[in-house]
Each structure stands twice: as structure tokens, then as C-alpha cells.
Figure 1: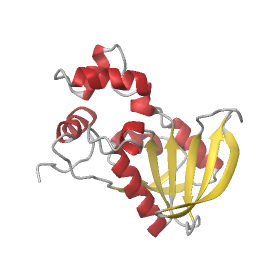
Figure 2 (figure 1 turned 120 degrees about the horizontal axis):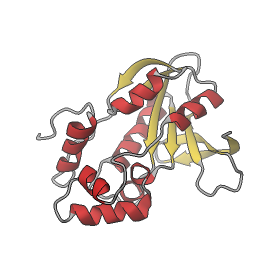
Figure 3 (figure 1 turned 135 degrees about the horizontal axis):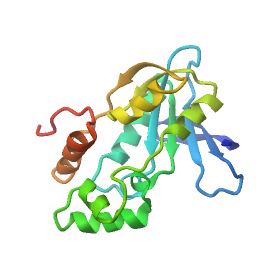
Figure 4 (figure 1 turned 90 degrees about the vertical axis):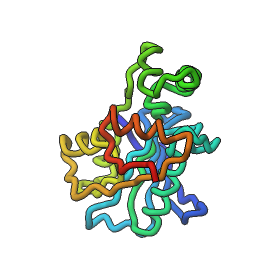
Length: 198
């Protein structure tokens, strides 16, 4: 059973957030996180982002994906409008950083992100957003506006006890390197993306 292990207010360049570490074990060095904006109104539908860890995009500013930019945009949005980011330790669509770099190496040979994972004998996407639902229940959040382009995240909410009031798009314009990656998201996973040719 996942539970709150620690929490504190953390000032960031986007504002101060209540950061909560959640795991089954207090000695877990990689807990999931709930990042809560100061002016969140829990009496109304709460703006929520399910965000999976991406060390290459968030820490090292990789141009191969838009994950770091999405996290930045989500922090800015919830600071301004209230809300919660559920930060999930599911690196590389939950294949881990070592396999992710192996997949990157295959992408250099012409495979797309899905083909590279499958060639390694891994799922195209092994993430589980059930833990995000569990965290929302732990925080007693029952009604949300979901910041996502991913229909799988929408499905998880719709099939849970959480009420989905609306979906808020969180689209980052493509760069010359990420365009093919975003096209694969759209074509294979059905992500709700506008054309990125602009």
C-alpha cells in the first residue's frame, strides 16, 4: 500500500510547491512524488498532470523528446491555476534508463521509438497509471481536469472512481529532432496532437 513518507514546501523558479514523497517503503530512494501548488482549491475540479520521469529530457534537456518542456509547462500552469503533478518513476515508458539508451542507439540506426523497444524485446509502453489513481485517492482528490495528450491516461481516469471534468491539452511544438518522435506518439499511441509541421 502506497503511503506518504515525507513532505515539505519547496521554492522553485515557478513558485513554491508542497512536495510529497510516496512509496510503500520509507527506504525507497526513488519514490513517486505529488507536487501541489500553493493556491490549489480542492473544492473544485483539481488540475492534474500524470508525468513519468525522463532524466534525459528533464535533467539533460534532450531534444529527442518534449518531456522536460512538458514538466516545465505543467509546473507553470499549476502554479498559476492551482493543481497537482503526480510525478511517476517510470523512466523511458517504464523500461529504465539503461534500456532507454539501448533504444536510443537503435533509433540512431533508423528505428522509431516503438520499433526500438520491440526489437529489444520490451513493450512499446510499459507504464501503469493505476498508481497515479491510488495517489489521487490517498490525497482525497475525486474530481480532476487532466493535463494530457495521452488517451491512455484519460482511459485510466475514466475507468477509476475519479471523475474527469475535462482534458487540458499540453502540447509542446516540435523541433527538428523531436518531430518524428511526436509523429510516432500520434500514429502508434493515438496521442491527441495537432500537426507539428509549423
